[in-house]
Image 1 (spheres, rainbow, N blue to C red):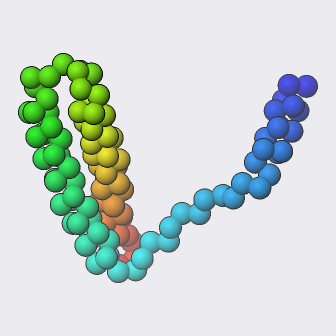
Image 2: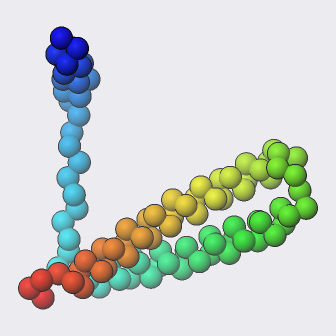
Image 3: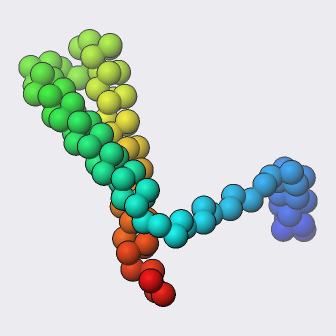
Length: 102
């Protein structure tokens, strides 16, 4: 009974949901390598910015300045997102290099 209710809700809620399709891997690894290099440069800049923020923040208590705390949290969230983005691009470069048949 409960399973039927859950299935009915799922059908109703996700009836129009589209499935995400994975990207097709390009034949040439050149653009992926260039994208990974530029992502890596941005990653290093973000790590430097977080490091500078942490050095500046040493003398402050957490929450002492709301704007400073929000800035740090946003910077760390952006650095985390960009790290995951860079890792994905790096894995794509590795996959293109190891692809059989090339």
